[in-house]
Image (cartoon, rainbow, N blue to C red; front, side, top):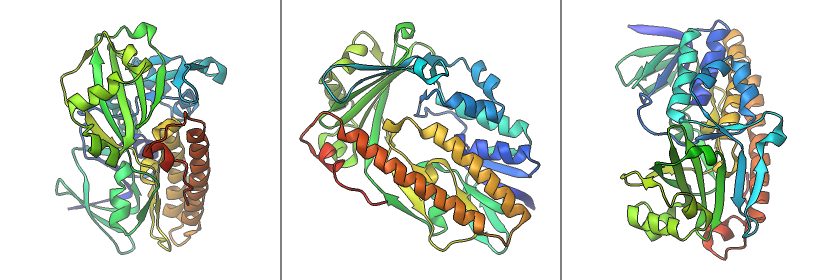
Length: 364
């Protein structure tokens, strides 16, 4: 049996769920496929204050508050000098940012999409696609679907777009190596701390439940060279920091091997391809976590993708909105690369490969 939808969304992170929520809310028939069951830790735990109007616009602000997120009062950084600089979120007009359990946050958005009418399938991924005027799709659970429009929300892997012939323009090889600590009195620690080091930079942030998360951001080859994915080298690197090590010195590091995540920046490009598919969130443009803009950017691209998909459903022969959508993402990419270069340029002058690479020009 084949089930027909207006839109199929592959990936249930913030971008995919928000796109599905908007489309279902406008009357489109939507299916969302999420390969996980939201049972594994997810990174991106700190949300900027700008998330508030975006969640309100989606109609999920009260559901978000019900998750019990920790207010984030600002950022402290050891970046452009050896002194700690502080930035308060009170200056933004929204009062605070937020520290969240990303599993709960992402699941909340998927639940909201389901409540709006989206058919959500967890533990399911898209394993085959063919376009013959409609998308003919095969799911890992054996279901077959058809869709007018296909949305790739598979994150940095951009699995769907690459399977369709799009290619990633990679701008770096950044990875994040992370662990968590328990027994932290987060009431006095409700801020994001960033500290530059010769091999990259660290961030630490509190989470609900008296937990602290810490992540070393470095390049993949540097990680391999120093074996930083192993517990002992990772902890030795942590102990060489200043404020970061002090922040967790009385906490208990949870007894797990550090987890590794890709954090590389890329832009997915599809020259000449006008088939009705769109990439959203990190699948379209993955950004450096130092920007702090990942989730807000995901929600904004979801809004643009939903509007584009709705137009394609009504006007399938008019591919101009695809060109416009891609052009806007290209402009965002150019702006992002310039901003990233400016921010790394003001960092402490570490004479190491991680930092010298970020002083080289990058073509978008």
